[in-house]
Image (cartoon, rainbow, N blue to C red; front, side, top):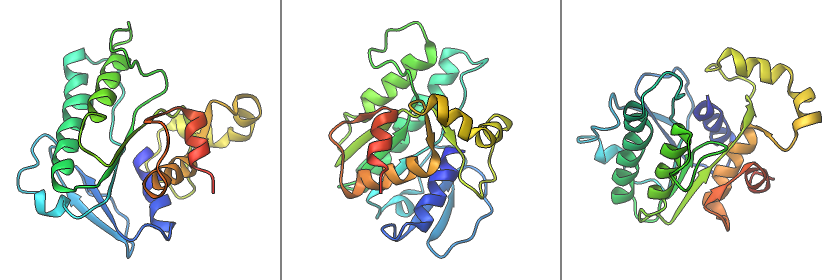
Length: 208
């Protein structure tokens, strides 16, 4: 869902000249700026290097819920997959800015009681060690979908309908995916003075 919202923002932004959408399965959308690369397993990127080279930004929006998962399985999907992809594009694209969608309450100490928060904290910490021009970890809360999105879970359709009410009472805990997308684009254009961005930081960077 986040990836689709960010994609729509990139396609309409004049600062973005070309988008390579890296998916495990085909996504039905056509646009003059858009190319698609199908990679069945992000842990196996051999043979895709040529297509992943030549870009100055990577917006990594893939992720799964930890509900019902053991720590080893969640680590493989959340940490191993992300770091393997990040190491690959870092080696292919000197000067790249890498933005990772993490989550509110992520545990930077890697020692807390919440399994998912520890794993995401480790992911954030190790991404910031890679040789990127910039590495940013976004920690959004609830996000209002962008009009025209197809990949929506029922919960987020509900959030979209009740967004005016949520905004009235929870404006510091909610974002729009347009703000998230603009903030990612601006992280490349202007940078930001923090590598870990909470909701208020994403809002600030996503202005304009």
